[in-house]
Amino acid sequence: LQSTRKLNDGNEIPALGFGVYQSEPGDETEQAVLLALEAGYRHIDTASCYYNEESVGAALKKCNIPRSQIWITTKLWDTDHGYDKAKEACYESLRKLGLDYVDLYLIHSPCTGKQLRSESWKALEDLQKEGKVRSIGVSNYGVHHMKEVFEVGSIKPAINQIEVTPYQVREELCRFCQENGVLIEAFSPLTMGLKLKEPRLNKIAQKYGKQPAQILIRWSLQRGLIPLPKSVNKQRITDNSNVFDFEISAEDMEALTKMDEYLVTEWDPTKLP
Ligand code: A2P
Image 1 (spheres, rainbow, N blue to C red):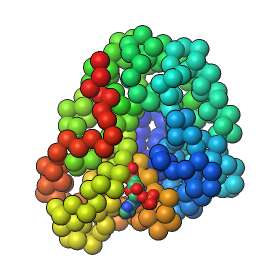
Image 2 (image 1 turned 90 degrees about the vertical axis):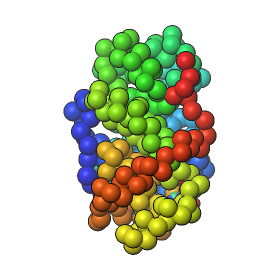
Image 3 (image 1 turned 180 degrees about the vertical axis):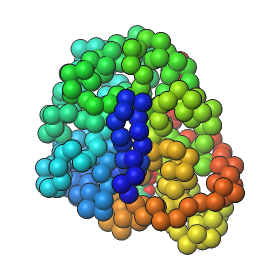
């Protein structure tokens, strides 16, 4: 559970994260984060548009784990794009989280258009220089958005967070990021629960004596991704972390990767101009 990956800025990020997308603000999120930290996760992924940063912050205050041992990611929402607004939004997220810095700050999506997202990127670069954020990156960026940020920025994103599963492999985008030293975080690595009963996945899970969810997380790790499974259930939070005691064979990795059906659980900003 403590394995890490090195980012292009030298920072080390825990290879498995814990997602709180669609965790209710208040007790539900606070408890889920406390359970995750007890289970050994040291990487929490939130966003201002999840409205649960305060609850993540409340859990961090209660957990008795040194701040330096926990990786915290949050994200800049679309309505806060532009240089000044982006900086203000980051300070506001820090206030809600009760933190002096976050480990990773991401532009949540490219939806605002070139001018605004480029200004926001400049703000992220300056926030990093100010020490408010240790690493900076993007989310939901396609290849053309990545090329744009390489061009307008003076710092390369460390991360692109996108939806990747065996049902949505995104071969080209992942290869492009990997070739350019940008690590991929996989949100909704469990397909939001949609495919957990799918027969081919269940057959492979049975073979390894593992749950379908554990196979999806392990596939992600073996692809070099940083999966961010979400759960608010104590047992499932623990189950999702028990993925370091087995290995999927090359043959089964390929079989899983071939299940690609371009599944998009919500919508796909990587296709936007
Ligand atoms: P719950 O929070 O009740 O555990 P994703 O990470 O792809 O967004 O998927 C999250 C969804 O999958 C949630 O509905 C979550 O429900 C469910 N889930 C999380 N872990 C497991 C698991 N190990 N087995 C089955 N369902 C899971």
